[in-house]
Length: 264
Image (cartoon, rainbow, N blue to C red):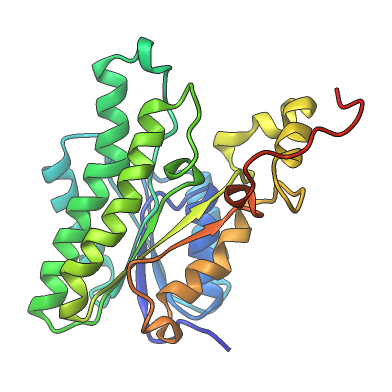
């Protein structure tokens, strides 16, 4: 059985959605976890409680990764290690979906997207990698990308660009860090239910259209991401480096679904 006993993880953006699902899956697999969010609220407290129910240690740190990158990353790194000195897994999950069509894009929106989705995981990984190398720790990094790193949407130019950067970062940091015994991989969800994708349940026609575009016909909850994340960060995946696991029901494999007769 794949498990994470003896490991400790920081999961950024883990009070809801995919990050929370990964934190709870890690805890269920035996890892101690440091959850992270911009502030501690009822959702954070509930996530911490659910992790502790698994019999593991669970801590919480705050930090707004949309702020100036280096000071914020430095503070988060220090706070996380103070809360749990044995961290050997970093999950870069925190991200944003704010966007505009390319011809309407402004600098503020673009900068916020790139700062949180690209710069923060890049430099937070650098902080942990330097620490792990100095302390001879075989660290593991998991980048949370998106199917949007490979399949574009016309109204999500900066988001698509940021997730494409995550795909490239997984490969680039893999070849930089594998010689030091640090593994870097990624997980890219397709459309899953999170607070940011609530349109799925508000708009039935949209939901049916997305189900049509997915070979297995499913738009699942975010907990579908947990088991893949556990595997990629486990000892069982010791020879898996620089890979992006797509958890998308086959959407990225399908060029164009057939339109059912009479579909509306």
